[in-house]
Length: 67
Image 1 (tube, rainbow, N blue to C red):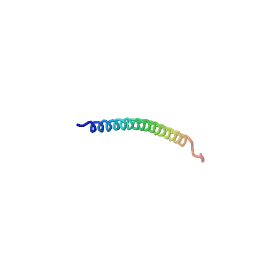
Image 2: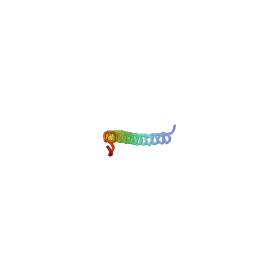
Image 3: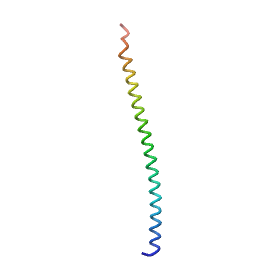
Image 4: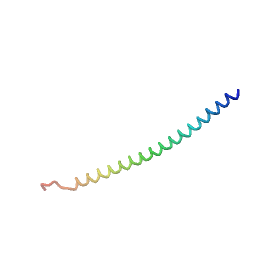
């Protein structure tokens, strides 16, 4: 293997390592975003359920106006 070919392979390897590090950072960032979105969705779901329960309690406890 000549020296020029070896240098080209080293350059390609260096670029691939840089790309891999950049992709790892992006994946980690996306995972954090997914985690935050899941927390937000869970919070909204719990809030909707609590509002639904509050509204259903109000409707059941109130007698009709003609009584």
